Image (cartoon, rainbow, N blue to C red; front, side):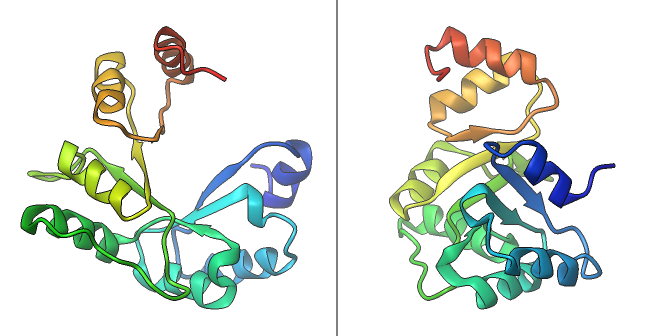
Length: 164
């Protein structure tokens, strides 16, 4: 398994989503981020609001972060009551990186995408491996799709004349 430093140097033009999956990994991630040469190439995500807060507290708006569960709920609830959520200070996420659904709750709906966009957020959906679902989500206006089937995603994006 390559180290983060190796990935960044091997693919110098690539951008990376980094999911900080454990409290144990956080100090190592913060140490690497302090070197400061990758802020424009990474977006940090986590299921832990506390880990995301630690990244935001240290680096503020210099680094992209995705929404944690607290902010996803804020946008989702806002769509139910007709309010656009606001985010202030250094804890401003730049993207909602979410599953289509969480248990019985549909997260990625037209109103969720519209609400996130109104709040200035991109919507990235994971993990989508079926072309029909990719098309449906693109029709809703999502900004990104994470997949294990990159060849299929490229085909869908090419069919829609979105490949750059």
